[in-house]
Image 1 (cartoon, rainbow, N blue to C red):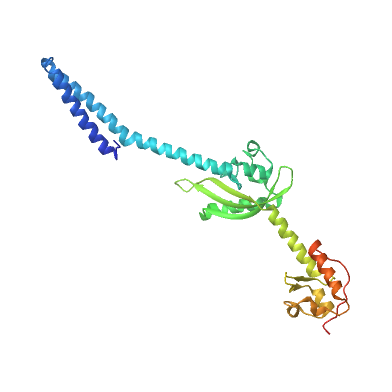
Image 2: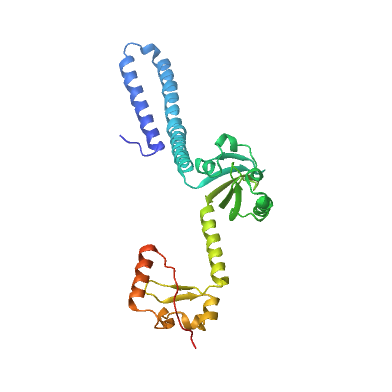
Length: 280
């Protein structure tokens, strides 16, 4: 029978103890009548001790065992998340010394867990960003912010630079004192490189002496650079939404344009000379 609560269990134990005592007394009394009171006192003491022990187990020990099992399960789940996460995770004390790192963080920086343990944040941080982390931690300590987000540069073991997006959480004790920091680090080096290349491409587009046009799949102009305006006389506002045919001079025949588009679709680019006319 399932016991729904410690108190119900205790009631069952007490009833069982009295029934057991009554049964023993009924069996033994005819043979040991002169010792009946003495035997009864001993049975009362033993059964009371057993009842209290069982009640203590039901009320205190069993819930503690259940809580401990639940805690172990929770820790196992957290450990699985920590170890299997594709995001780097590092735990550091209030002085900025690393205590534990997960495999993703280790792989991102090229160190083993043992090599990272005991290192300070400054030792794995790009020299230009060393002061920023300390400033952020000081701000979190004084403002009681529980978490924050920041991008910074790390140093790979090989010396290469690694961009990381950091999500920082602080753990405090009951007095409000900082105990440790947990930092989630996502490697955004590739994203940063793409952004850099896009900025370079945008700068080249804007400053090139060659006229440039960007169109969509329907061959409608999306953007032109300043050299296009200088060369053709069409401003960006006038050109956007138009078909590049507005520049056609009639010099090239349909075969020429058919070959141009065939090469463009097949190879992704076309290079050659076009005779176009200006706005005027």
